[in-house]
Length: 223
Ligand code: DX5
Ligand code: ZN
Image (cartoon, rainbow, N blue to C red; front, side):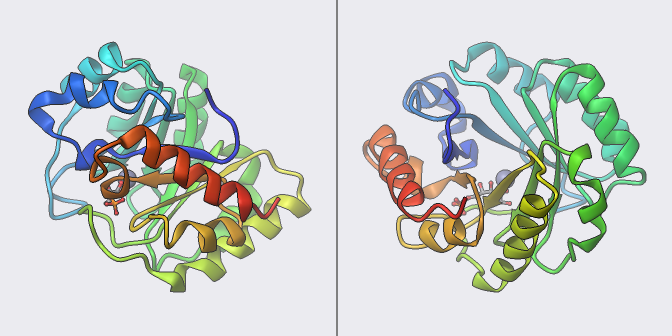
């Protein structure tokens, strides 16, 4: 299922040793958000292609891979090749973002680019058609459970305006600190795809948390 607004739970907040059971708890999700961290681009380490391949084989919903790694030009295509529906790399880490996006699409994945809170997005305006998703980080990447940064909203708003003006089909994703109390402002600013880690897996009923988030986002949708 993938309808606007999309809710993508982050398994960073799941129990890593019970991944199969955790994946079964989020059947209402649009995508499973998989945070790959390398201890270089961010000061935290999660998992690599071998684990992501097992998640891909096990998950009932498609994968939205968020690569917080150095040298995505070298590593990102491998995640598309193992079957991830969407692969997002960081603009700050990529040498040739445009050719990397094209390679990801050639392999058959949706191509995504992410920006940290302080990274400007103006350089992406000309490239909106080259990406299927732009991820505006609403926390500093690296850890779950941080507070939402409202100062990232003007950037998201400008991206949404540009996308509308150019009639671009790109999805606008937010990630970090998304909860029932912050999702409305991100939806109003133009996000249509929402990552939530602790707000989903921290709930006794993750599927109910997904529905509640989706409902609030839909009520505040901007386009
Ligand atoms: C942070 C990750 C996020 C994280 C979000 O670097 O990219 O996906 O899991 O977690 P919450 O929703 O708890 O802020
Ligand atoms: Zn993420």
